[in-house]
Image (cartoon, rainbow, N blue to C red):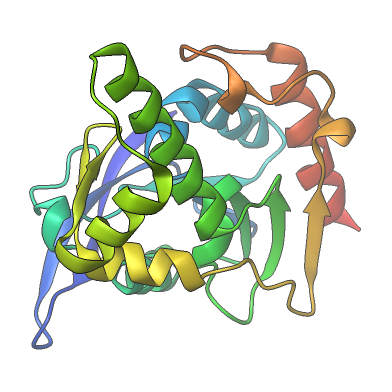
Length: 227
């Protein structure tokens, strides 16, 4: 049964705040931390992510999808969050839920805790995520009769922060994202989109679902854990 759990997320100065996590927790041996896609891709992939977790539950695998600080039900202001905060949150969630494995989706692969067997589904660089959001803002500005450029917006963002796709990002968040790339550490498996089938749901204009893709992604992870 799907549950809403909490986990202690680190704060500056050593304190911690509670953040929510969606989970299927039956106290089983295999416990998978799911690190979501970032920003608007998280919205487009939310249904797929949860449906994968449902299938893993049916296969006897517990799974946990944490809210990152400043996202979803989090009470923290995203404009004060850095990518490092998200990485620390992922580590804290892995400890709290005693994760044995990790599934990282798209930009979630930038935040994978060390030392756990993991799968990276269609991982992407932080710079690629930023450029996609910058291009979307340029197109939106053009439709509104304003002229903006990707390079100009990026320079502004690195100096004073920037709002992209409805998200207010600090200059430090932008700087850190620009430098981040997924790390294929020992024990990491890459899941390319052609292994799942169809086109990536993050490319669609609106949030969508694909039972076939959820089946395939869950099967890859289940077989990998069992191997």
